[in-house]
Image 1 (cartoon, rainbow, N blue to C red):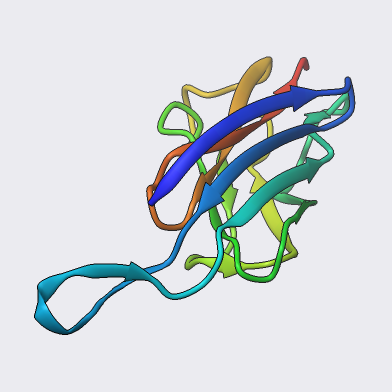
Image 2 (cartoon, rainbow, N blue to C red; image 1 turned 30 degrees about the vertical axis):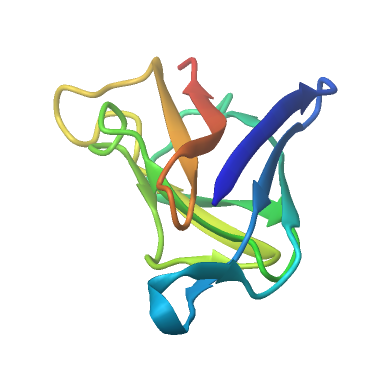
Length: 140
């Protein structure tokens, strides 16, 4: 069972609170909790990247997600950003993690020159719900 308990923003980071209860099948077809509820709190830093330079080659940046070891997440670029913004690696991460993303040069691919704005989305590993949006802006 997963329940949503709120979002808190403090200007620098976003905190999403989820509560997870682990349930397993018991003899006779019933369900019973096998562990107490775990609250998953996710934070990401930084929440925004502004690239104030003209990129002449692929450039890499990193962000950090912090949560409990039992809480899973993954990150992907948004569909509208995938031609110039690429999150490296795939798969779910449990607990704290650092992700790297690549930004293509200002005119690559053709048709996506700067200025441009995009997002990296952080999802909950089980429900695939969006937890956090990290913005990436390249004004020139």
